[in-house]
Image 1 (tube, one colour):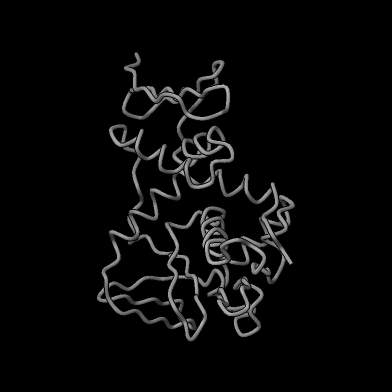
Image 2 (cartoon, rainbow, N blue to C red):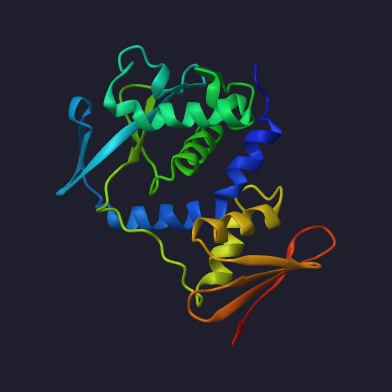
Length: 229
């Protein structure tokens, strides 16, 4: 029985925590509150009037407390709808992350198995560089997780004004290494960055520099925008 995630998995999830949190907000604002349906044979997902191309990332069995990756689902084996899930497994093999390579994960030993399933979906979204994930009930006791694979989904921009809020919200998701989370955010947006002592300095496209300072415990102690040039 699994009682916790591996260090490799947690560090990978944290690398995506800031941009992923912001991106999930953008996706939720984009999707209407409406009934949904999906045609897996055509990778099609419909929610209200919004139609998206999606992939199946995985499913969570609430009764058993288990997670099954889409690529390991025998009913979907080899189909286009699990292409993104298969890419997650490939990444897991390349980077020795066991949670991505095990076909099924027993989450019943976690304090909160449902939250553990959400963390798997979040990390899978990050590795696949998908613009969010969508979790929906798919029958009694089953939750299916989709990854959007459609340019219609808006990307959360790097907004200097909102940057302090975005960084603080994202680093709180896991909290293992705020520095790792901040670096991952700027890497995702292709922003040059450098480390000077206890500060991380990122040169934003707007001409500003974001200076993120960390205390002796590795926590963010200050976020400042400065004018460069």
